[in-house]
Length: 199
Image 1 (cartoon, rainbow, N blue to C red):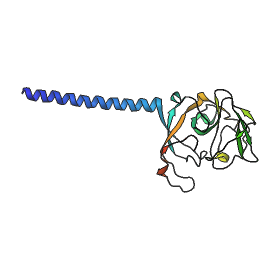
Image 2 (cartoon, rainbow, N blue to C red):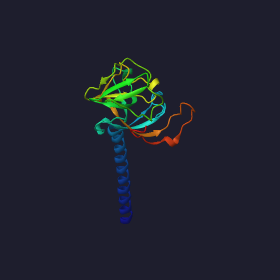
Image 3 (cartoon, one colour):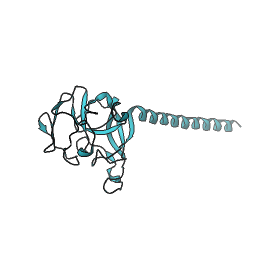
Image 4 (cartoon, helix red, strand yellow):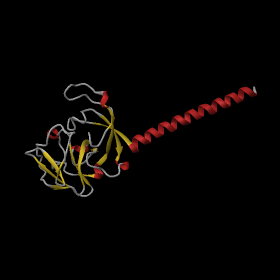
């Protein structure tokens, strides 16, 4: 009888340990996906060819991003633009930098240097109302889509430069691919880390 009681006690302690570990794991995942990492979907084709419509991205929260750098892909939500829905764009310039665009040649310049942009779908030919050259205010970002002529971005006066307080975070990982714009197929080989410069 004594042996049976000891065995029952050991079994209860084991079950309690497993339940405790499970609860801690679930809490950790919930906290991680609430404050550190978010899963955000791409809506539309403004980031083609780098990102496709319906791509699912892991986004590092702005609380843990530090300073944003040119070339990084960020998610912004500006309450005065598109009802505050999150949009995915690439950082072209940061506070204090001067952006200029030659719409005749399709070239973008930052601080007088023409950007080398292997990640874009096509050169930048569409004007959206922003007057260039433009000095990006401190604490703000100038963002563009990679699919330049099919993107609403900082060239549009309704969005303009984006205060960093409107940045949700930095895209760090492609978790699930959306269908390719041209083929309609999902390329699972695209799953992986999102590089700031290469796209």
